Length: 258
Image 1 (cartoon, helix red, strand yellow):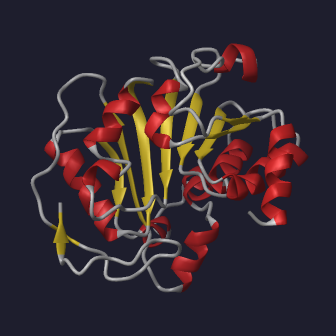
Image 2: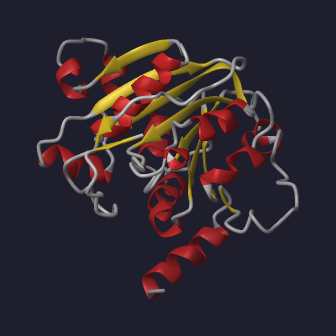
């Protein structure tokens, strides 16, 4: 590990709004804030919003600035990246932002039923080879149900046509209520004068800026996840993305995948 990374991890250990639980798979100790985030950490009753796979935390911090009446928690396993948003929010004295370093696979261990109002998935790895690894698969949606409020909201913002198409098929197959959907976000934004929509969807992550520079269109889907009803995987073949995204493994030689 580089000296710079070690320094960042040392900073994170001292940050009062960063919780490190990377060893949750082997640590049976109940997470102390589960069911008590509002009471014991944020000290308010505002809705809690998660950004899963938050990377540098641009959305967590950006949304925290826009909505002081909501609480935001960025979740990722990459601590060196998370340091950017954690440091930024600490220096700004933001009291409605926190970060949780852990594997998303175990996310339901950190939040009690009905504790979370919304989830943001910002530029998640599309995981084209294995459905259970996709953050909008039944594997993960089932986990989200364990702590989301009834009809909690899920936001997907992505450069991946594969992940966007897969999630749209998932939503359609399970008749999940769609609030908003576009396969060309910034073209759609040009047609609306709603300032709040521009502010929210106009937040751009580090990698998003690079994908836009490459000429890729950004997709956005917002849907509700009802607490009841069996979830099933869509039976559909989807064309794989024909490019290699930053820090993602090279795509397979297949042309479609489920």
